[in-house]
Image (cartoon, rainbow, N blue to C red; front, side, top):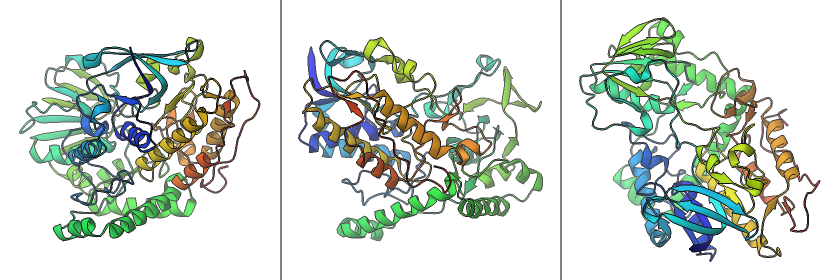
Length: 508
Protein backbone atom coordinates (compact mmCIF):
# COMPACT_ATOMS: atom_id res chain seq x y z
CA UNK A 1 0.00 0.00 0.00
CA UNK A 2 1.30 3.45 -0.93
CA UNK A 3 1.77 5.91 1.93
CA UNK A 4 2.47 9.63 1.53
CA UNK A 5 2.56 12.61 3.81
CA UNK A 6 0.00 14.59 1.80
CA UNK A 7 -2.67 13.51 -0.67
CA UNK A 8 -4.16 16.35 -2.74
CA UNK A 9 -7.47 15.77 -4.49
CA UNK A 10 -7.85 17.82 -7.66
CA UNK A 11 -5.43 19.26 -10.22
CA UNK A 12 -6.93 22.67 -10.93
CA UNK A 13 -5.60 25.96 -9.62
CA UNK A 14 -6.06 24.92 -5.99
CA UNK A 15 -4.49 21.48 -6.25
CA UNK A 16 -1.53 22.67 -8.29
CA UNK A 17 -1.09 25.66 -5.99
CA UNK A 18 -0.86 23.37 -2.97
CA UNK A 19 1.53 21.01 -4.76
CA UNK A 20 3.82 23.89 -5.73
CA UNK A 21 3.82 25.21 -2.16
CA UNK A 22 4.71 21.79 -0.76
CA UNK A 23 7.51 21.13 -3.21
CA UNK A 24 9.04 24.57 -2.73
CA UNK A 25 8.89 24.12 1.05
CA UNK A 26 10.93 20.94 0.77
CA UNK A 27 7.99 18.60 1.36
CA UNK A 28 8.03 16.39 -1.76
CA UNK A 29 6.16 13.45 -0.24
CA UNK A 30 2.77 14.08 -1.84
CA UNK A 31 0.52 12.95 -4.67
CA UNK A 32 -2.12 14.81 -6.64
CA UNK A 33 -5.16 12.66 -7.41
CA UNK A 34 -7.10 13.80 -10.48
CA UNK A 35 -10.13 12.03 -11.90
CA UNK A 36 -9.64 13.45 -15.40
CA UNK A 37 -6.85 12.82 -17.86
CA UNK A 38 -5.22 16.23 -17.59
CA UNK A 39 -4.76 19.14 -15.21
CA UNK A 40 -6.90 22.24 -15.51
CA UNK A 41 -9.99 21.88 -13.34
CA UNK A 42 -12.74 24.28 -14.39
CA UNK A 43 -10.73 25.33 -17.42
CA UNK A 44 -10.39 21.75 -18.60
CA UNK A 45 -14.08 21.00 -18.19
CA UNK A 46 -15.58 24.17 -19.64
CA UNK A 47 -15.04 24.29 -23.39
CA UNK A 48 -18.19 26.07 -24.50
CA UNK A 49 -17.98 28.69 -27.27
CA UNK A 50 -16.72 32.00 -25.92
CA UNK A 51 -15.42 30.64 -22.61
CA UNK A 52 -13.04 33.12 -21.01
CA UNK A 53 -12.10 34.54 -17.63
CA UNK A 54 -13.65 37.72 -16.25
CA UNK A 55 -10.60 38.41 -14.06
CA UNK A 56 -7.71 40.16 -15.84
CA UNK A 57 -5.31 37.54 -17.12
CA UNK A 58 -2.21 39.01 -15.48
CA UNK A 59 -3.89 38.67 -12.08
CA UNK A 60 -5.39 35.27 -12.77
CA UNK A 61 -2.25 33.24 -12.29
CA UNK A 62 0.26 32.20 -9.67
CA UNK A 63 2.45 35.00 -8.33
CA UNK A 64 5.61 33.00 -9.02
CA UNK A 65 4.53 32.09 -12.53
CA UNK A 66 3.80 35.30 -14.43
CA UNK A 67 2.87 34.76 -18.06
CA UNK A 68 3.96 37.54 -20.42
CA UNK A 69 2.25 35.79 -23.35
CA UNK A 70 -1.42 36.17 -22.42
CA UNK A 71 -3.19 37.11 -25.63
CA UNK A 72 -5.35 39.79 -24.06
CA UNK A 73 -6.65 41.51 -20.95
CA UNK A 74 -9.05 38.61 -20.40
CA UNK A 75 -7.67 35.17 -21.19
CA UNK A 76 -9.60 32.55 -23.10
CA UNK A 77 -10.42 29.26 -21.40
CA UNK A 78 -8.06 27.17 -23.49
CA UNK A 79 -5.23 29.59 -22.76
CA UNK A 80 -5.78 29.18 -19.03
CA UNK A 81 -5.85 25.40 -19.31
CA UNK A 82 -2.59 25.55 -21.27
CA UNK A 83 -1.09 27.85 -18.65
CA UNK A 84 -1.87 25.36 -15.88
CA UNK A 85 -0.36 22.52 -17.90
CA UNK A 86 2.77 24.59 -18.49
CA UNK A 87 3.05 25.44 -14.79
CA UNK A 88 2.74 21.75 -13.84
CA UNK A 89 5.54 20.90 -16.27
CA UNK A 90 7.72 23.82 -15.13
CA UNK A 91 7.35 22.72 -11.51
CA UNK A 92 8.13 19.08 -12.43
CA UNK A 93 4.88 17.82 -10.95
CA UNK A 94 4.48 15.00 -13.44
CA UNK A 95 5.92 12.41 -11.07
CA UNK A 96 3.37 13.41 -8.45
CA UNK A 97 0.28 13.51 -10.65
CA UNK A 98 -2.07 10.52 -10.68
CA UNK A 99 -4.37 11.20 -13.62
CA UNK A 100 -7.51 9.16 -14.37
CA UNK A 101 -7.63 8.48 -10.63
CA UNK A 102 -10.95 9.44 -9.02
CA UNK A 103 -11.24 9.34 -5.24
CA UNK A 104 -14.00 6.93 -4.30
CA UNK A 105 -13.78 7.43 -0.54
CA UNK A 106 -11.57 8.86 2.18
CA UNK A 107 -11.91 8.16 5.89
CA UNK A 108 -9.89 9.09 8.95
CA UNK A 109 -8.40 6.14 10.80
CA UNK A 110 -7.97 7.48 14.33
CA UNK A 111 -6.05 4.45 15.56
CA UNK A 112 -3.36 4.83 12.90
CA UNK A 113 -3.69 8.64 12.54
CA UNK A 114 -3.94 8.44 8.76
CA UNK A 115 -6.42 9.09 6.01
CA UNK A 116 -7.34 5.89 4.17
CA UNK A 117 -8.21 6.73 0.58
CA UNK A 118 -9.75 4.42 -1.98
CA UNK A 119 -9.17 5.35 -5.61
CA UNK A 120 -10.44 4.06 -8.93
CA UNK A 121 -9.30 4.37 -12.51
CA UNK A 122 -5.72 3.94 -13.64
CA UNK A 123 -4.30 3.94 -10.10
CA UNK A 124 -7.13 2.03 -8.47
CA UNK A 125 -6.40 0.83 -4.97
CA UNK A 126 -5.79 1.97 -1.44
CA UNK A 127 -3.64 4.88 -0.35
CA UNK A 128 -2.61 6.09 3.10
CA UNK A 129 -1.97 9.78 3.72
CA UNK A 130 -1.08 11.58 6.91
CA UNK A 131 -2.73 14.73 5.54
CA UNK A 132 -5.63 15.18 3.13
CA UNK A 133 -6.05 18.32 1.02
CA UNK A 134 -9.38 18.72 -0.77
CA UNK A 135 -8.83 20.94 -3.79
CA UNK A 136 -11.88 19.77 -5.70
CA UNK A 137 -13.22 23.15 -6.75
CA UNK A 138 -16.69 24.56 -6.24
CA UNK A 139 -17.82 24.53 -9.88
CA UNK A 140 -17.36 20.90 -10.80
CA UNK A 141 -20.78 19.26 -10.83
CA UNK A 142 -23.47 20.76 -13.09
CA UNK A 143 -26.76 21.73 -11.51
CA UNK A 144 -29.56 20.25 -13.60
CA UNK A 145 -32.93 21.85 -12.84
CA UNK A 146 -35.98 19.71 -12.15
CA UNK A 147 -37.97 20.46 -15.28
CA UNK A 148 -41.05 18.40 -16.09
CA UNK A 149 -40.59 16.33 -19.24
CA UNK A 150 -36.93 17.27 -19.75
CA UNK A 151 -36.14 13.68 -20.65
CA UNK A 152 -38.60 13.83 -23.55
CA UNK A 153 -36.55 16.33 -25.53
CA UNK A 154 -35.46 14.45 -28.68
CA UNK A 155 -32.53 16.60 -29.78
CA UNK A 156 -29.08 17.29 -28.34
CA UNK A 157 -29.41 18.25 -24.67
CA UNK A 158 -26.40 19.17 -22.56
CA UNK A 159 -25.08 21.45 -19.82
CA UNK A 160 -22.77 24.30 -20.79
CA UNK A 161 -19.93 22.74 -18.78
CA UNK A 162 -20.31 19.46 -20.68
CA UNK A 163 -20.47 21.00 -24.14
CA UNK A 164 -21.35 18.59 -26.94
CA UNK A 165 -19.06 19.64 -29.77
CA UNK A 166 -20.66 17.05 -32.04
CA UNK A 167 -24.09 18.68 -31.84
CA UNK A 168 -25.09 20.42 -35.04
CA UNK A 169 -25.78 24.01 -33.99
CA UNK A 170 -25.33 25.84 -37.31
CA UNK A 171 -28.75 26.71 -38.65
CA UNK A 172 -30.51 25.07 -35.72
CA UNK A 173 -33.13 26.44 -33.36
CA UNK A 174 -31.32 26.56 -30.04
CA UNK A 175 -32.81 27.11 -26.60
CA UNK A 176 -30.46 28.45 -23.93
CA UNK A 177 -31.59 28.20 -20.31
CA UNK A 178 -30.04 30.71 -17.93
CA UNK A 179 -28.50 34.19 -17.97
CA UNK A 180 -25.56 33.74 -15.61
CA UNK A 181 -21.84 33.99 -16.26
CA UNK A 182 -21.64 31.11 -18.75
CA UNK A 183 -24.78 32.06 -20.66
CA UNK A 184 -23.60 35.64 -21.10
CA UNK A 185 -20.54 34.31 -22.92
CA UNK A 186 -22.35 31.55 -24.82
CA UNK A 187 -25.29 33.53 -26.22
CA UNK A 188 -23.38 35.85 -28.58
CA UNK A 189 -21.53 32.85 -30.03
CA UNK A 190 -24.75 30.89 -30.57
CA UNK A 191 -26.47 33.89 -32.12
CA UNK A 192 -23.78 34.09 -34.82
CA UNK A 193 -24.47 30.64 -36.26
CA UNK A 194 -27.83 29.32 -35.07
CA UNK A 195 -30.99 29.93 -37.07
CA UNK A 196 -32.53 31.34 -33.91
CA UNK A 197 -31.88 31.30 -30.15
CA UNK A 198 -34.55 31.35 -27.44
CA UNK A 199 -33.13 32.59 -24.16
CA UNK A 200 -34.94 31.64 -20.95
CA UNK A 201 -34.20 34.19 -18.24
CA UNK A 202 -35.35 33.49 -14.71
CA UNK A 203 -33.59 36.56 -13.29
CA UNK A 204 -31.68 39.29 -15.15
CA UNK A 205 -28.09 40.04 -14.17
CA UNK A 206 -26.27 43.26 -13.49
CA UNK A 207 -23.86 43.57 -16.42
CA UNK A 208 -21.06 46.12 -16.75
CA UNK A 209 -18.79 46.82 -19.75
CA UNK A 210 -16.02 44.28 -20.22
CA UNK A 211 -13.57 46.42 -22.15
CA UNK A 212 -10.05 45.17 -22.52
CA UNK A 213 -8.69 43.80 -25.75
CA UNK A 214 -5.75 41.99 -27.26
CA UNK A 215 -2.17 42.62 -26.24
CA UNK A 216 0.08 43.56 -29.13
CA UNK A 217 3.25 41.64 -29.96
CA UNK A 218 5.17 44.65 -28.71
CA UNK A 219 3.37 44.63 -25.36
CA UNK A 220 3.96 40.90 -24.87
CA UNK A 221 7.62 41.33 -25.76
CA UNK A 222 7.93 44.17 -23.25
CA UNK A 223 6.35 42.01 -20.52
CA UNK A 224 8.83 39.21 -21.27
CA UNK A 225 11.86 41.48 -21.36
CA UNK A 226 10.90 43.63 -18.39
CA UNK A 227 9.45 41.51 -15.57
CA UNK A 228 9.28 44.61 -13.40
CA UNK A 229 6.75 46.14 -15.81
CA UNK A 230 4.64 43.00 -15.57
CA UNK A 231 4.89 43.05 -11.78
CA UNK A 232 3.72 46.68 -11.72
CA UNK A 233 0.76 45.79 -13.94
CA UNK A 234 -0.21 42.93 -11.63
CA UNK A 235 0.02 45.25 -8.62
CA UNK A 236 -2.19 47.82 -10.36
CA UNK A 237 -4.75 45.15 -11.27
CA UNK A 238 -4.73 43.92 -7.68
CA UNK A 239 -5.47 47.39 -6.33
CA UNK A 240 -8.26 47.85 -8.87
CA UNK A 241 -9.77 44.54 -7.80
CA UNK A 242 -9.63 45.41 -4.12
CA UNK A 243 -11.31 48.74 -4.88
CA UNK A 244 -14.22 46.87 -6.51
CA UNK A 245 -15.08 45.24 -3.20
CA UNK A 246 -16.93 48.34 -2.03
CA UNK A 247 -19.45 48.30 -4.88
CA UNK A 248 -20.01 44.54 -4.64
CA UNK A 249 -20.49 44.48 -0.86
CA UNK A 250 -22.98 47.27 -0.35
CA UNK A 251 -21.09 50.52 0.18
CA UNK A 252 -23.84 52.99 -0.71
CA UNK A 253 -21.84 55.43 -2.83
CA UNK A 254 -19.78 52.79 -4.63
CA UNK A 255 -22.82 50.61 -5.33
CA UNK A 256 -24.80 53.56 -6.70
CA UNK A 257 -21.95 54.51 -9.01
CA UNK A 258 -21.52 50.95 -10.30
CA UNK A 259 -25.28 50.54 -10.73
CA UNK A 260 -25.37 53.72 -12.79
CA UNK A 261 -22.62 52.36 -15.05
CA UNK A 262 -24.54 49.12 -15.53
CA UNK A 263 -27.79 50.91 -16.37
CA UNK A 264 -26.00 53.23 -18.79
CA UNK A 265 -24.48 50.17 -20.44
CA UNK A 266 -27.92 48.57 -20.79
CA UNK A 267 -29.55 51.73 -22.15
CA UNK A 268 -26.72 52.29 -24.58
CA UNK A 269 -27.01 48.81 -26.09
CA UNK A 270 -30.74 48.03 -25.94
CA UNK A 271 -33.06 50.53 -27.63
CA UNK A 272 -36.39 48.79 -27.06
CA UNK A 273 -37.92 50.00 -23.74
CA UNK A 274 -39.82 46.75 -23.11
CA UNK A 275 -36.73 44.63 -23.65
CA UNK A 276 -34.70 46.97 -21.45
CA UNK A 277 -37.25 46.60 -18.68
CA UNK A 278 -37.08 42.81 -18.92
CA UNK A 279 -33.28 42.95 -18.67
CA UNK A 280 -33.21 45.30 -15.68
CA UNK A 281 -32.59 43.61 -12.29
CA UNK A 282 -34.90 44.47 -9.39
CA UNK A 283 -32.41 43.53 -6.69
CA UNK A 284 -29.39 45.24 -5.16
CA UNK A 285 -26.22 45.62 -7.18
CA UNK A 286 -23.79 42.89 -6.10
CA UNK A 287 -26.44 40.54 -4.69
CA UNK A 288 -25.72 38.17 -7.56
CA UNK A 289 -22.45 37.85 -9.40
CA UNK A 290 -21.82 40.99 -11.44
CA UNK A 291 -21.13 40.04 -15.06
CA UNK A 292 -18.88 41.59 -17.70
CA UNK A 293 -19.90 41.67 -21.34
CA UNK A 294 -19.92 43.99 -24.33
CA UNK A 295 -21.77 41.69 -26.72
CA UNK A 296 -24.53 40.03 -24.68
CA UNK A 297 -27.01 42.91 -24.88
CA UNK A 298 -26.52 43.44 -28.64
CA UNK A 299 -27.12 39.71 -29.17
CA UNK A 300 -30.32 39.74 -27.09
CA UNK A 301 -31.53 42.81 -28.98
CA UNK A 302 -30.88 41.23 -32.38
CA UNK A 303 -33.48 39.52 -34.54
CA UNK A 304 -31.71 36.22 -34.05
CA UNK A 305 -32.64 36.00 -30.34
CA UNK A 306 -35.94 35.85 -28.49
CA UNK A 307 -35.87 36.61 -24.77
CA UNK A 308 -38.44 34.83 -22.63
CA UNK A 309 -38.20 36.63 -19.28
CA UNK A 310 -39.20 33.57 -17.28
CA UNK A 311 -37.88 30.15 -16.39
CA UNK A 312 -38.25 27.03 -18.49
CA UNK A 313 -41.12 25.18 -16.81
CA UNK A 314 -41.77 22.07 -18.89
CA UNK A 315 -40.69 20.18 -21.97
CA UNK A 316 -42.85 18.09 -24.28
CA UNK A 317 -40.76 16.82 -27.14
CA UNK A 318 -39.40 19.85 -28.96
CA UNK A 319 -41.98 22.16 -27.37
CA UNK A 320 -40.58 24.17 -24.47
CA UNK A 321 -43.03 25.98 -22.20
CA UNK A 322 -41.93 28.80 -19.94
CA UNK A 323 -43.41 29.66 -16.56
CA UNK A 324 -44.90 32.70 -18.32
CA UNK A 325 -46.93 30.39 -20.56
CA UNK A 326 -45.13 30.93 -23.87
CA UNK A 327 -44.27 27.91 -26.01
CA UNK A 328 -41.07 27.73 -28.07
CA UNK A 329 -39.82 25.02 -30.41
CA UNK A 330 -36.16 24.03 -30.37
CA UNK A 331 -33.80 21.55 -32.00
CA UNK A 332 -31.04 21.86 -29.39
CA UNK A 333 -31.38 22.54 -25.66
CA UNK A 334 -28.44 23.99 -23.70
CA UNK A 335 -28.59 24.28 -19.91
CA UNK A 336 -26.43 27.10 -18.55
CA UNK A 337 -27.86 26.51 -15.11
CA UNK A 338 -24.84 26.69 -12.85
CA UNK A 339 -23.31 24.20 -10.46
CA UNK A 340 -23.83 22.39 -7.17
CA UNK A 341 -21.95 25.07 -5.29
CA UNK A 342 -23.18 25.25 -1.71
CA UNK A 343 -23.51 21.46 -1.40
CA UNK A 344 -20.22 20.06 -2.63
CA UNK A 345 -20.47 16.52 -4.13
CA UNK A 346 -17.12 15.41 -2.70
CA UNK A 347 -18.42 15.97 0.83
CA UNK A 348 -20.31 12.66 0.72
CA UNK A 349 -17.07 10.76 0.07
CA UNK A 350 -15.12 12.03 3.10
CA UNK A 351 -15.58 10.63 6.62
CA UNK A 352 -13.86 12.18 9.61
CA UNK A 353 -13.67 11.13 13.21
CA UNK A 354 -16.60 9.07 14.52
CA UNK A 355 -17.53 8.20 10.93
CA UNK A 356 -19.32 11.50 10.27
CA UNK A 357 -19.24 12.54 6.61
CA UNK A 358 -18.27 16.04 5.57
CA UNK A 359 -21.73 16.35 4.02
CA UNK A 360 -23.31 15.57 7.38
CA UNK A 361 -21.06 18.05 9.16
CA UNK A 362 -22.08 20.65 6.58
CA UNK A 363 -25.78 19.75 6.66
CA UNK A 364 -26.66 23.35 7.62
CA UNK A 365 -24.11 24.85 5.24
CA UNK A 366 -20.34 24.71 4.86
CA UNK A 367 -18.31 25.89 7.83
CA UNK A 368 -14.64 26.00 8.77
CA UNK A 369 -11.93 27.87 10.56
CA UNK A 370 -9.94 30.16 8.30
CA UNK A 371 -11.98 28.94 5.31
CA UNK A 372 -9.49 26.06 5.29
CA UNK A 373 -9.74 23.59 8.21
CA UNK A 374 -12.79 21.82 9.63
CA UNK A 375 -13.51 20.49 13.12
CA UNK A 376 -14.00 16.73 13.25
CA UNK A 377 -11.71 16.20 10.25
CA UNK A 378 -8.14 15.94 11.56
CA UNK A 379 -5.17 16.75 9.33
CA UNK A 380 -7.47 17.95 6.55
CA UNK A 381 -7.43 21.18 4.56
CA UNK A 382 -10.04 22.45 2.11
CA UNK A 383 -8.86 24.88 -0.55
CA UNK A 384 -11.30 27.01 -2.53
CA UNK A 385 -14.09 25.76 -0.32
CA UNK A 386 -16.18 27.43 2.41
CA UNK A 387 -16.03 31.25 2.33
CA UNK A 388 -12.98 31.28 0.06
CA UNK A 389 -14.58 32.65 -3.11
CA UNK A 390 -14.51 36.27 -4.21
CA UNK A 391 -16.87 38.53 -6.09
CA UNK A 392 -14.37 41.31 -6.72
CA UNK A 393 -10.86 39.95 -7.26
CA UNK A 394 -8.87 36.88 -8.32
CA UNK A 395 -9.63 33.62 -6.53
CA UNK A 396 -6.05 32.50 -7.17
CA UNK A 397 -4.95 35.03 -4.56
CA UNK A 398 -7.11 33.27 -1.97
CA UNK A 399 -5.73 29.87 -2.94
CA UNK A 400 -2.17 31.07 -2.41
CA UNK A 401 -3.09 32.45 1.02
CA UNK A 402 -4.70 29.15 1.99
CA UNK A 403 -1.71 27.12 0.79
CA UNK A 404 0.61 29.31 2.86
CA UNK A 405 -1.59 28.81 5.93
CA UNK A 406 -1.62 25.05 5.37
CA UNK A 407 2.19 25.00 5.23
CA UNK A 408 2.41 26.89 8.53
CA UNK A 409 0.02 24.41 10.11
CA UNK A 410 2.00 21.44 8.78
CA UNK A 411 5.15 22.88 10.31
CA UNK A 412 3.37 23.31 13.65
CA UNK A 413 2.11 19.73 13.37
CA UNK A 414 5.68 18.47 13.72
CA UNK A 415 5.76 19.73 17.32
CA UNK A 416 2.60 17.82 18.31
CA UNK A 417 3.18 14.46 19.97
CA UNK A 418 0.82 12.49 17.74
CA UNK A 419 1.26 14.85 14.74
CA UNK A 420 -2.49 15.34 14.44
CA UNK A 421 -4.10 18.72 13.87
CA UNK A 422 -7.58 18.80 15.38
CA UNK A 423 -9.63 21.96 14.93
CA UNK A 424 -11.37 23.17 18.08
CA UNK A 425 -15.14 23.18 17.48
CA UNK A 426 -15.37 26.53 19.28
CA UNK A 427 -12.82 28.03 16.90
CA UNK A 428 -14.85 26.90 13.89
CA UNK A 429 -18.04 28.27 15.43
CA UNK A 430 -16.41 31.60 16.20
CA UNK A 431 -15.14 31.93 12.64
CA UNK A 432 -18.57 31.03 11.30
CA UNK A 433 -20.07 33.73 13.51
CA UNK A 434 -17.50 36.22 12.20
CA UNK A 435 -18.56 35.49 8.63
CA UNK A 436 -22.23 35.85 9.50
CA UNK A 437 -21.66 39.17 11.27
CA UNK A 438 -19.59 40.55 8.40
CA UNK A 439 -22.15 39.46 5.80
CA UNK A 440 -25.32 40.49 7.61
CA UNK A 441 -25.86 43.86 5.91
CA UNK A 442 -24.27 43.04 2.56
CA UNK A 443 -26.30 42.59 -0.64
CA UNK A 444 -25.48 38.87 -0.61
CA UNK A 445 -27.76 38.47 2.41
CA UNK A 446 -30.06 41.49 2.31
CA UNK A 447 -30.11 42.32 -1.41
CA UNK A 448 -33.41 40.51 -2.11
CA UNK A 449 -32.13 38.03 -4.63
CA UNK A 450 -31.40 34.34 -4.78
CA UNK A 451 -27.72 33.69 -5.32
CA UNK A 452 -25.31 30.76 -5.28
CA UNK A 453 -23.26 32.30 -2.47
CA UNK A 454 -25.87 31.54 0.22
CA UNK A 455 -26.88 28.10 1.45
CA UNK A 456 -30.67 27.90 1.29
CA UNK A 457 -30.78 25.42 4.17
CA UNK A 458 -29.51 27.94 6.70
CA UNK A 459 -29.50 31.28 4.91
CA UNK A 460 -25.79 31.63 5.69
CA UNK A 461 -23.20 33.03 3.33
CA UNK A 462 -21.05 29.94 2.74
CA UNK A 463 -19.21 30.55 -0.56
CA UNK A 464 -17.94 34.13 -0.47
CA UNK A 465 -15.33 35.65 1.79
CA UNK A 466 -17.07 38.87 2.97
CA UNK A 467 -13.96 41.03 2.89
CA UNK A 468 -10.96 42.03 0.83
CA UNK A 469 -8.02 39.81 -0.05
CA UNK A 470 -5.91 41.97 2.26
CA UNK A 471 -8.35 41.23 5.07
CA UNK A 472 -8.16 37.49 4.36
CA UNK A 473 -4.38 37.63 4.47
CA UNK A 474 -4.56 39.45 7.80
CA UNK A 475 -7.09 37.01 9.24
CA UNK A 476 -4.98 33.96 8.43
CA UNK A 477 -1.84 35.74 9.62
CA UNK A 478 -3.51 36.19 13.03
CA UNK A 479 -4.17 32.46 13.31
CA UNK A 480 -1.54 31.47 15.86
CA UNK A 481 -2.29 27.76 16.19
CA UNK A 482 -4.74 28.17 19.04
CA UNK A 483 -7.46 27.07 16.61
CA UNK A 484 -6.12 23.54 17.07
CA UNK A 485 -6.56 21.29 20.09
CA UNK A 486 -3.53 19.62 21.64
CA UNK A 487 -3.56 15.84 21.71
CA UNK A 488 -4.43 15.93 25.41
CA UNK A 489 -7.43 18.20 25.01
CA UNK A 490 -10.86 16.75 24.19
CA UNK A 491 -12.33 20.26 23.81
CA UNK A 492 -11.48 23.92 24.19
CA UNK A 493 -13.44 27.05 25.00
CA UNK A 494 -11.03 29.33 23.13
CA UNK A 495 -12.83 30.98 20.22
CA UNK A 496 -9.99 32.98 18.61
CA UNK A 497 -12.67 35.23 17.16
CA UNK A 498 -11.63 38.54 15.65
CA UNK A 499 -13.94 40.75 13.58
CA UNK A 500 -13.31 40.56 9.86
CA UNK A 501 -11.54 43.64 8.52
CA UNK A 502 -12.13 45.14 5.11
CA UNK A 503 -15.90 44.75 5.23
CA UNK A 504 -18.41 47.48 4.42
CA UNK A 505 -19.09 50.08 7.07
CA UNK A 506 -21.62 48.85 9.63
CA UNK A 507 -21.35 45.19 8.61
CA UNK A 508 -19.40 43.92 11.58
